[in-house]
Amino acid sequence: MEPKKIALLAGALIIAVTAAFLARSMFTDGGAPSADAAAMPNPAEMPHVLVATKSLPVGTIVGPDAYRFQPWPKELVEEAYYIQGKSDDAKLVGSVVRTAISAGQPMTMGSLIQPGDRGFLAAALAPGMRAVTVPVSVQSSVAGFIFPGDRVDLMLTQSVAGGGDGAPLKVSETILRNLRVLATDQRTNALGEDGKPVVQTYSNVTVEVTPRMAEKVSVAQTIGAISLSLRSIADSNQELEEALASGDIDAPKAGDPNGEKTMMAALSNRPSDGRSSVSTGADVSRFQRSSVPAKPVDPNAPMAANQGPVVRVARGSAVTPIPLGSK
Image (cartoon, rainbow, N blue to C red; front, side, top):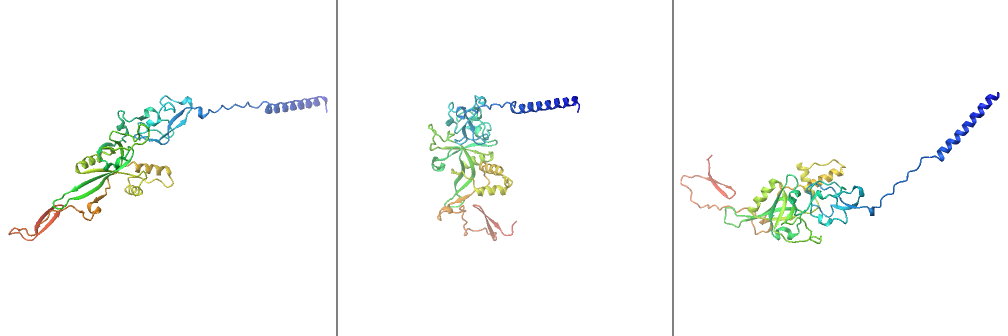
């Protein structure tokens, strides 16, 4: 082999070996510099902001389970937030949500309206609803154990005299169901100055109703005595089945937990006046009446000389004689 070719091969070999060493040094010693991760802030040193534990629609009366304090980045804290140690969260119980708050969202001072503030009762009403006040007594108000935010049924008790001389019919009927209590007298929350529930008597209860129900309550107060029946927190399966059968509530798709939750919330917040139950005196005692006393008819009463056979038709307490053959 010629010396010139041998020199070229030796030079190429030296260049290849040198390039290999340089590449190895680049991938071992000259790797990408590692970035130091920023130290995570200690939650104990972060400000704690008041956030909603569940979705709070407009008009919701805030309870002690509706909020909690949660660590929040210091640079994201706003002046309108409730910060632990700088605000008294116990005073928020009984306030009303003015603007909707999502679960986990910070509660702001502008999103709540406190009892006694102007427009408090109007903010507590759902869209399209009305507030009416019902006079009650200690016996008809569950001895003061009804608080704002509870759900009640409205019962009307009256005596129906009819047209007869007998004892009047004693009757009680449930005219409205599932009404939300807004206030008792002028009290819009159930807590005292020490933050604990206080049971006290009252003479007026303000409830949330539809405009049609407001008319019924106004008439009922002129007919007889009104009393309240406290409802359970648990939903009634019977009312759910009736609402589904009537089409008032749409059934969710199978396996849709969010749809079922929405359906139950719609049922629990829906007042009703379509179905009423009635109990008469005879349902309580065998010595009481079960119907309205009718006006007695004297069978020995003289009849007109030219009057033939008649049929007496009773309509309620009125009895009308109708001659046979007449139109």
